[in-house]
Length: 163
Image 1 (cartoon, helix red, strand yellow):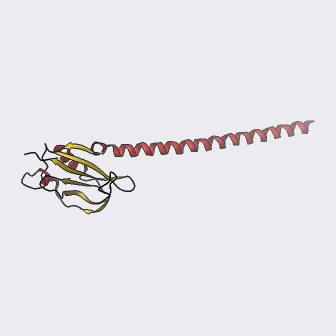
Image 2 (cartoon, one colour):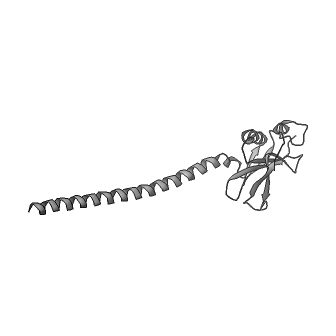
C-alpha cells in the first residue's frame, strides 16, 4: 500500500510538472505573438512620426518664407534633396542632393538620389540672383518619395510672381 501511495504521489508530481511546463510554453508563445504585434505597431507609429514633418508640404501651397525655412531645416539631411523653381529660374535649383525623378505626370512621383548639389542656400536670399526666393511669393509644394515610400525630397514651384 505504501508503494502504491508513493507511486500516486510521483505520478501526481509528474502530471503537475507537465501541466506547469505546458502553461509556461503557452504563455511564452502568446507573449511572443503579442510582442511581435507591439513591435509592428511601434514601427508603424515611428514611420508616421518620421513622415509627419513632411505632411505640411504634401501637395499644398506655401509661402516663400516657408520654402527658405524648409531649406534651413532639411539642408543637412542625408539622402534628401530640395528643388526650388522660382519665377526667374523655371528649371529650378537643387539643394542638398539632386534627385532623379520619374512619373512626374502622375500623382505618385518617385525619386532617387543621383548626386550632390553644391548650391549654397544663401543664394535663395540674394535678390540679385535668379534663385532668390521671395518671402511673400507662393509656391506649390510636392513631396517626392522613393519606391520604398521613404521621403527623398521636396519640390517647390513658384505659382505667383510678386514684385
